[in-house]
Image 1 (cartoon, rainbow, N blue to C red):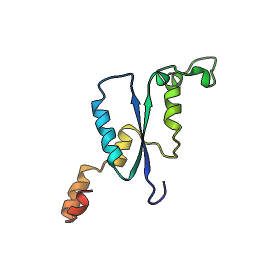
Image 2: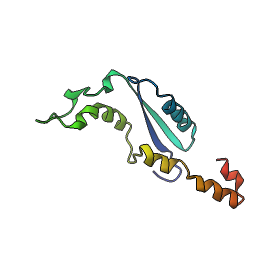
Image 3: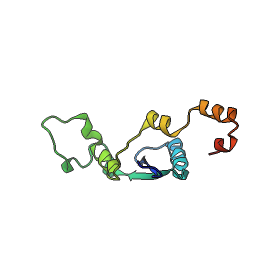
Length: 114
């Protein structure tokens, strides 16, 4: 991403499973961040495992990647050169707790609130 450009953050909303309150709250927090362009990929039956197998090239031996192929096609359709997921995304998007102490020690409390 270029200078001043918002980072694309993608949340896959799997409507087929229940109990994702923590993930939904995390998505709301991400959406509120002005430095991020948040895209929610809403999926239902079309993103179930083994969905849309006719859309891709089938091989003579099914690979484990076929299980989630349509889900990944939908996620990647927004297009981005950068892709951060899971713990790696948290490392990039969330500041390390030691950074908060650094801001306090430098008397930069205004930056602490950002």
